[in-house]
Structure formats: C-alpha cells, structure tokens
Amino acid sequence: MRSDTTAQAKTAAATPFRRRVFYIPGYDPFHPRRYRELFRKEGTDQAKITGYTLDLKSKMTQGPYGWHATTTIQTQETEAEIDVLVWSDIVKDSMSNSIPATYLQLVRTAWAYIGSGALFRLMRLRKGPMIAALYPIFFLLAQLGLAILAGWILGKLATHYTHWTLGLAVFALTVAGALRWFRSIDNKIFAYYLMHDYAYSAQSGGANPAPLEARMSDFRKTIRAAMDMDVDEVLIVGHSSGAHLAVSILADMLREGLPENRSALGFLSLGHVVPMVSFLPKAQRLRADLAYLSTTNDLTWVDVTAPGDGCSFALCDPVAVTGVAPPDQKWPLVVSAAFTQTLSPERWQELKRRYFRLHFQYLCAFDRPGDYDYFQITAGPQTLAQRYATRAPSKSRITKAVNRYTSTK
Image 1: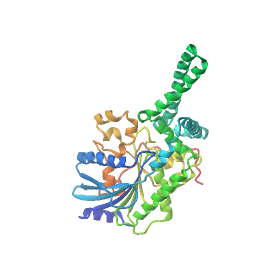
Image 2: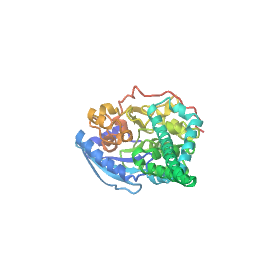
Image 3: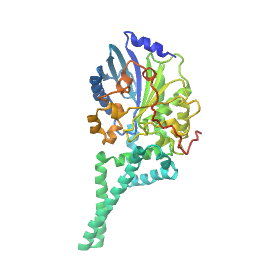
Image 4: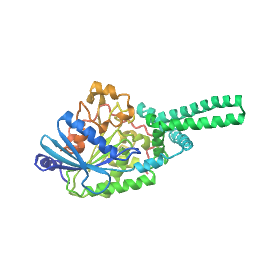
C-alpha cells in the first residue's frame, strides 16, 4: 500500500495530485446533475473566499454520471474525477404512490418505528432529526384534517340547500381536491417527500431493498476498479442516507480484498442519519458493516456533522450509538462543521431557519472556513488521512449506546 509519505512526496512535486471521488447522495429524486451544478457554484465561491482556483469540465472516464475538477492551491495542481451513484430513478419509483397509498405508508412507517421501540430510543440522541421524522406525519394528518373539515362544511351547506346525496358528493370532491392541492405545493413544505424518505428506509425493517442493493453492488465494482488505477487517493463521500449506503459498499469491498500496491482510501460521511436505519430490527447487515468498518486499517473514516443541522444525528458516533462498537474501535473520527463558527453571523442568520438547506451546507461554501472545506477535501492536494492526521475528535460527540437491536446476523 502506498504510504502517506509517498503521497506527500508527490504533492510536493510538479506532477498533479490525482484523486477519484465517488459521491453517494441521500434519498433524492433529482438527477445528479444538480450536484454538479452545486459543486460548480459553491466551489467557485469557496475558492474565492479561501484563495485558490477551481475549474470544472466533463468527466474523462467511463461509468456513472460525474465531472472532472481541477484546483490549484499554493501552486500545487490537483485533478479529481468525481462519479455519482445514480439511484434517483429508484427514489422516483418509491415516490410514485397515490395519495391514499401515502397515508397507508404513513401508518406502516409510524408502526415500524413505534412498534419496534426504535422511535423512543432515537429520541434519546437528538431532537432535531426526530422532529424532522415526525414532521411529515403531523403535517399529513393536519392536511387530512383540514381537507375533511372543509369537505364537511361545504357538504353541510350543499345538503341544507339541496339533497344529502349532493352534499356527500361535495364532501368527497372537496376532500380529494384539497388533498391534491396540498400535494401540489409539497415542493414548499416537503411533507410527502419526507414521508417517502422515512418509509423507504422502514419498509424492510432496515434492510436495503433489492433494486438498491443491485445498484450498490455495481457502484462497488466501479470503486474497486479505481483502486487499481494510478491515483493518489480514492475517496468515498456519503451524504445523509447516502452515508449508510457508503458504509455497506465499503465493507463489502474491503471484505473482498484490496490490491497490495494501492491508493490511499478515504471515507467522508456527511450529515449522517445512520440511526434511522441501524435502530430497526432487520438492519443486521448495516450493523455488521458498521462494526467491521470501525476497526479496519485499510481506510481513514472521518464523520462530519453539525449541531446546526437539525436533519442529522449531529456528533453521534454512528457505530457507538448503534451499540456495535468493538473494544478496538478506531473509526470514525467524529468532528463538527461548527456552522455557528464557520459561517459569519450574517450568513448564519440567513440560513439558520432554512433547515433543509442547512442539511446540504456540508457541500457548500463557508465564509469563515475551518479545517473542513469540502472542495479541498475532494479536489485538493492532501489525502483525508493527511488533512485530519492531528485532528482530535469533537469533545461533544455522543458515544452512548442506546439501540435496542444490536444483532449483526
């Protein structure tokens, strides 16, 4: 295996530092081109703030959707080929439910978390993600209640002036119309979106659905092929629910074995929601993968969250809180993006109530950046191991095991 000393020697040389990046998004129905545009826009802003150059162009390799990024930081050039795990089509299919089917989904998802006891365990960790989890349930029930109330009022009026059969028809049409209207504005309130998100994780009790497992397997093969290439680092980035997909992809790849003379391997998990899955009874695969990855010497795993992100389990060690941390646990290094410090007071005031936007802040520019810079990590001349070699874990990290289900088989 190539040592970090070798990578450092190449960094100091005139040849570009080369990296393959594999980005795994969370539950998102939009095509990955939105991540390319986000990288271009926010990366350009970050480069101006920090004082380096960043350019994007079309990717230069075959395979999944992606792009090519080049930076020059203190005269050192870096080339990064970025591939994205495309599963937006799977997400879209899972969101194609009718309105009645979504309400049935609500009942099943609520029961999956309440009936298993997972909900009450999760509440012991962070309030933010639990509010986010309960949000679609309360909003969808409120929408149903308002639709029924409007239908009852208009139906009563129709019955009073005509006949009860017309009143019943008015009631049904009003309820259906109101629910369709609520769904049409979901791009502003995200109730249906979040309901489908949590339902997708809960539908199999924490096990990955077969179509997603197949897509993960194909992506793992692409990553494994990159380990044979002449690059300085292979970096896997998992955001939101993409973090737990990355855990399983990496665990499978490491179990299969890696080439002896290989690139440095890094794993960056961002804004994770791992407990939403690992706390479910049938998540044995994920729990086993978490335990396995936490002790390996074959990679560097850095987990970045922020208390300001109410949609993630901020500073919760995903291995430890799941209850599967072995005595020799090494990973992840849990650090905070510290939004209140790395964003100026003006920028923080602008963003602090935009909860879903903050969940993507890890992929965006910081106007007061600390040691976390997404664009230098993915397209800069240091491996993840080098960048965080002397970084201590956050003193506020949560490591108490609160999961009821800890079986890995």
